[in-house]
Amino acid sequence: MNLIDFTKQLLNKLIKIRLSYKHRNACLGLVLTLLILLLLPNSESIAPESQNPNQNLVLDNSAFSTSTFDPLNTATELNSVYEIEATIETVEANVGIQQSLENDSITIAEVRSGDNLSLIFDRVGLSPQDVYRVSNSAGDASILTRLYPGYSLDFDIDSEGELNELEVIINPLESYVFELNSAYNFDITHVLRDPQLIPIYKEATINDSLFLAAQRGGISAAITMEIAGIFGGVVDFMLDTRVGDNFNVFYDERHLDGEYIGNGSIQVAQYTNQGENFTAIRYVNLNGEVDYYNPLGESMRKAFIRNPVDFTRISSNFTLSRRHPILNTIRAHKGTDYAAPTGTPVVASGDGRVTWASRNGSFGNLVVVKHGERFETKYAHLSSYARGVRVGSRVKQGDTIGYVGSTGGATGPHLHYEFIMDGAHRNPRTVHDQLPKAESVPAEEMDRFNQQSQILMTQLNSITSAPTLAQNTLSTTTLSASTGE
Ligand SMILES: [Zn+2]
Image 1 (spheres, rainbow, N blue to C red):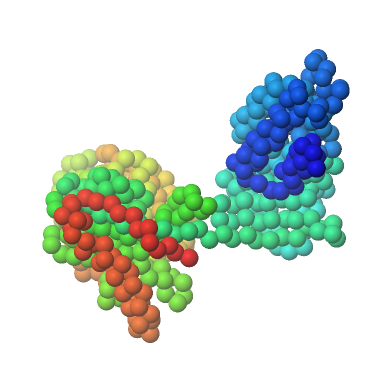
Image 2 (tube, rainbow, N blue to C red):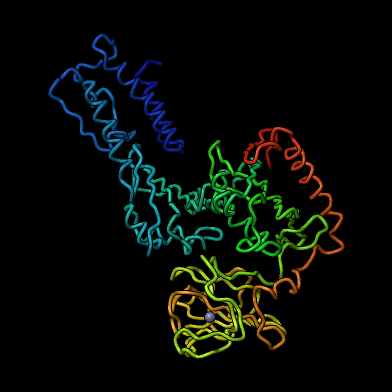
């Protein structure tokens, strides 16, 4: 086999094999190197017509089609190689539709806002008949009706314009592959990939706030929010945090093909607040529900969260006699005011059903949630309601129900939050300690829970008891030994 045949074969392979962009470019590099070898003046393979110095390459993507590309007829000088490389960059810069270099055979279309299958097919030059055929694939093709921005569609179209394969990529871990079969129909495969889970341990000591401490400890805002949520039932991060409090967290990083793709779940976390130690262990029960429990299997969560908004400061506490700032009269203030910027999300403090979601006098835009027979919570002065929140809708604890505003009788943007227990207004901040906890691990699952939690605690203790770490107020360790499944 001579160099020309080898180059041609390699090109053929490139076109047939689906490669990532990086790999394609690497292979292309090899092809270009071979081309250079072919074009060297002393190469015995050079055909007579390629000696013509005036011949110029038409360097669009079709230069790389198997049917039309012949290095002997097209390439003439080394300059061509650079022009080809320039073409690659142009292609990569095309954000809307990326086309590979193989005779347009792989075309990647990003799903845009307002897109549907017909629009996308049209954009890549496919016909309504193609839309029909793919939509009527053998199997569940419903993913094609649920295309959201962020997805990408990877088309494999041959030189006759025939769609051979379509991959709907939801994320690096999930895709649907539509593959043309011998019956001229599409087979659908749902592809799920498992990331590699790498356990990460981090700890920090509070000198100021949880968030600043976390930031110094290299803990992401998202993980910090989760920590605040997990311990929110036992620690009031607004009032209870003290200098010297410390916490640690043990979570997974998700990697795919050696690349970091995001964080997994917090497996176990500990918070020491004014000398009192709380441990939260993640447990998935037999129904697949996830929650955090202390080592005794009791939920870390209360039936209600303490603060339904990430407030910047409490502007007015619960009191039964207060001068009203607008009416200038002494009136009871039957709730807690949380000053926060307009638009800050307000969350339901517990599971329940919305019984009011509209204007209500001085409350402005008001949401009322009823939680079973005994409890009711009110969220006033909202700038707007969260999507789907209307009378009768069910909400879960932590669901966003609206956004901070200053509608009704409000002097500035804040959330006015009321907590009603057995028909009486209660101070939302102090009633919290009397509230019921969320459900514990079911008795029949305690053996299972204990087994899992002991493994996690052993892992955690093996790190925290290390003397070098105990002396540091702030440290970060990455465990390299074990990986998840
Ligand atoms: Zn108020």
